[in-house]
Length: 220
Image (cartoon, rainbow, N blue to C red; front, side, top):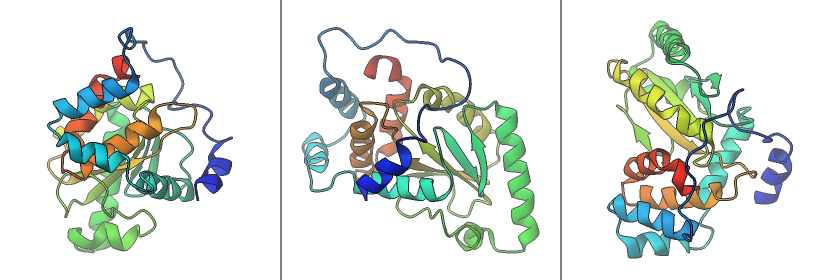
């Protein structure tokens, strides 16, 4: 499966995000390694470090990442960040108003369907299942935002404050589902995704997620 994805993604994932150049950070501290930096984040996230290390070295540690990427490719994802708002695609680090409009339109469609909120998403969008992916928000949310993201992509980091603002004003009828989509152009995106998946195994994905994105400039 990995070779199929590589062939599919090799030409499509030339860059992440939308137009524009993100602000460059200070960069990693001299003399440190990516392994030492990601391990420091795992420690800060409160993980059981022995279990986290064992998880990262298990057989096929990227199986869930490949599963997420397969779903993304089948859904037309061609870069990061990409969001499916009840199936409607929003691409790039967009302004809050773009997300708010997409959420309102998705909510209106969901309400018009007549389906129960608890089953609406799974019934209407079976091709992009929530599965065991990390979720923030109520299980019976009318609107599900599926985020395909790459921890090393600067645009994925840039959009996080916007998402927090949008979700804070959404009134509890929106949930976010995180799917991994590490780009081949980013050397550390795949190991970061595996590290995050192993944090998810301990129920601490979002703590790890927030630390990685807030420290993105010095991690990568």
